[in-house]
Length: 228
Image 1 (cartoon, rainbow, N blue to C red):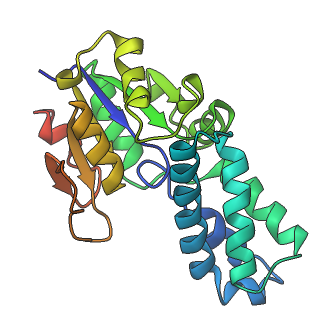
Image 2: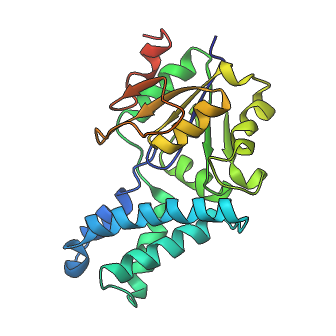
């Protein structure tokens, strides 16, 4: 029996491309508007790669630092290094990321039945709290769990262990939901039941652990649990 539904944050509940998209629409951003999609992709990819490398090498730092480092690489790759105003604008909006459209209704449906809900993310507490508040989700989550409590990024098992420490659940009583295939694999290997939110229609990763369910978005999560 599922006792808690736990969500990854970035790319799962929050649209990580929304910061770049919003800045690209501002007046005077012609150069950035031409490459914003590339920058958004590179920014996210490097953010993940840097977190994995830091986890493997024991060189942990907070996710805000990783996010800034990844953005610097992405801007240089697009030939926009040195544009401090652009960098500041993009980083500022990262604290106000938009939730995907189906997220508030989905969380409300879970909340109304008394289902325990939480975020488990690489993000720092401050980053996550700001995003949750900006998206109006604060009243729909029972906890916001950050890797900073254990000092290592996902998919280290100590991160997934934070859920049981918080709620007293066994791994099989947790449904873990993420848009990142590698994250779902790590959570499945830990013992969670899992859903991969495959918004881009990508192939399943060739890893030892496969997602329990695959969905195109989050709207079907309540139905999966028998909640109408």
